[in-house]
Amino acid sequence: MKAYHGSSVLFDSFDLAHALEGDGKVKFGYGVYVTGNYESAAHYAFNKKRPENKDYYVYTLSIPDRTPDNCLSLLKDVPVCDSIIKRTEQKLGISIPADARVEGIPFRKYLANLLSGVNKPIKQMIDRQ
Image (cartoon, rainbow, N blue to C red; front, top):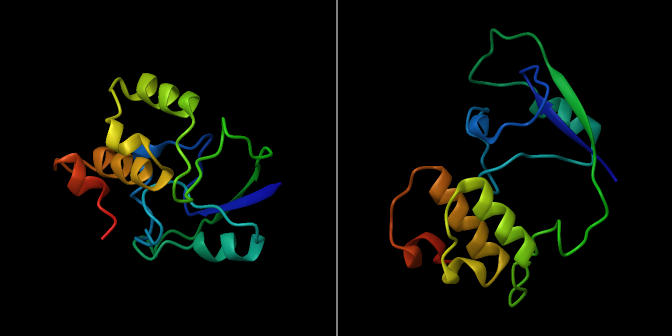
């Protein structure tokens, strides 16, 4: 599958350290936003925080077929794949709490809060309300 990412910044690879530096449209949480529509990516390449920047880029990505090993399900009662947990723990040098491992949404919320510097009890970090 092909996907596109629009940016006002030229780069060689995605770096989540810059994930919150875009134009502030963090509609679906912390991460890299892609779309299947080239025109949408081109639209999002314009950064309202840097209107003086006249350079816009659309990156084309090849997305592999979904497997339990590379795709985080956001469906209720679908546990996070053990290999995803292990890779995340190795990369971050932490142990993911059991409460955040049970499903994709709590896992994603826990990581977003952690990477954003939020320091709250795990229950508050993953609470769906």
